Image (cartoon, rainbow, N blue to C red; front, top):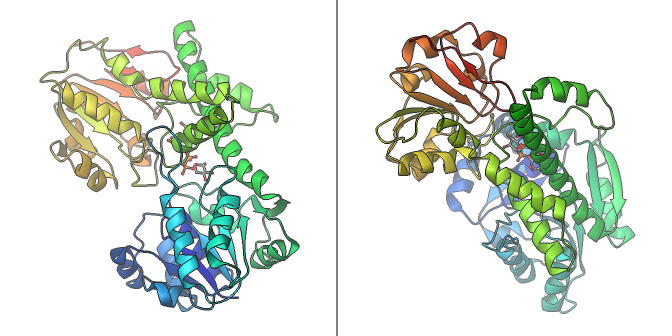
Length: 436
Ligand code: UDX
């Protein structure tokens, strides 16, 4: 079976490499020449644990190319793994999907199955299928299947190789059979066959549910602060109930990334144009927007104005294990700090380079020590291990005034209490141990 994966972002590249790991021969196509050049040198354009090793291990089975004619020749299956970014109104921009559809029309030379891995609004697969069929005018048989991706950044390889479920949305036994054949060696995964619209919905409903869970726990955390309860004890107690589960109950400064913000808005938009408002999803979006600036609100207790204040920023990525900054809470916060005249020093183990493209003018440090030195306040936006393991006594020693605002609850309150510092986190009591 000759398989093409169009798009070498998180979804496309990880899918291609994992299919190769399971024994398939795969062609990876992308329009960006630089990405293909990197891939041909054995380097991944995205930071993802274990991916380069797997690329190396399976290099005999993967071809990377930006040569369209070569890529689309003699294919049996085409996976679409291109981006569907958010439009201003919250809807998904499907331009890249239709660009692939045009490539398919112009280049295929035999019957094939098109498999949608990208997250697309419910109903899109049928539209794309019709778009291609109308233009092919019966020259080749073409059918579409929905096969949404559930990988999380940082664990993308394992999430794909050992997916809890593989959703196959098809409208013919032919398509279902091909996909089952492709996934036959994914022993750890449950395969669920559905119709196409349901498969598309499973993806959105899953992501939006998780986003909702996070916004819910963030609201409960804010209430815990007001009422003197501790969110960690609360989630421990809640999570032991198997119906609730203990995952995705970490309170913080809100969700970011390439999926939750985009997919909540896209489903809300889709529901609205179908006159079926999703009030819970709308609430999750609004809560998340406010949660992202929660630390700024807290900072006002200590500094009315930030002009001339030395600010240390620890963690820039939207979560640990990635250099991705899409919708990262750090962005909106640093923007605010900058607009208000703060002197900013920032640190992140891998996302600094990307961040400096958005904020070239702030100071980037190589170590946490340098970042917090002489700072008047420190913001923590990402729970990197390096931050969690950092010696808390150094905040007291190195900062000019040790005010720490921790948006990811990196430290235990009992540990923090040992030091001469002010410490605010999410859903827990403030510690104000400043003797100076
Ligand atoms: C997510 C989904 O997990 C994945 O299945 C889907 O395919 C794409 O979107 P990802 O965006 O990579 O993956 O990261 P995830 O680990 O889910 O975290 C998303 C955001 O939620 C991060 O900003 C994270 O900090 C936040 N989060 C997560 C919380 O605030 N609390 C939690 O308990 C869990």
